[in-house]
Length: 313
Image (cartoon, rainbow, N blue to C red; front, top):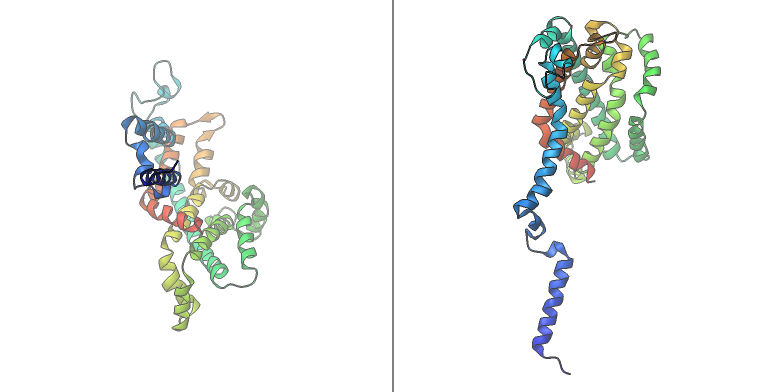
């Protein structure tokens, strides 16, 4: 039985339609997001997961905030008071933290150590990443892998030989001890991150600058670093956060109260035997987390862009 031209066209159209459904990239724009059109689907796929994520993320900050303004009676009496809100706010815990302890000095020490250690780590990481990625010497990949593997060494193992060095050079119980030891775990990761970002910058820019007579230092300062600002911001945020929250080295190398950092000072000075000053503890934790949260809020776009540029390669 002969097949008419109309039937052939119909069959061909059906095949093309089926092929288009099997290749979503060739579908019309917006076809892949049809499941977001109706409100019930948006609620299930977008709003509910987002609310759960925000609750899990923000609940610790909420708990620290309400505990900060609770009196001891509200903290321990769950029969008459709810644990999830404050009935009678008080500033006694904040007053104790700032005027009966050395918390302002701890904040200054933490800021000083974090900023200086971050700048030292970024300088060393930029030099190492540029040498590994742009100079193209033999064994550069092995060197880069070795630097990253050094980051995987637990600090609980490194602090023993580092403690010997700190004692021998007379740096014990001084901020300089932390400033010089923090780069041991900051430089490896920052170097790995900047290696990925430098790799995404075209080599042609550097070759043109070499032809025009620019030195390696000029190329690094005037060409690569301006293009790698998002990567530098990301590495700086990472290094600053780790330095701010570091506990093992700060506990080992610092003993006097006036030289302690916030993570160590809050734990050691606000816990007296089996007595926990929970209000002041939560106030110290909340105040100590705010600088890092503010830093992330200002540079979150650069942070995401740098992580994408480093990983995509």
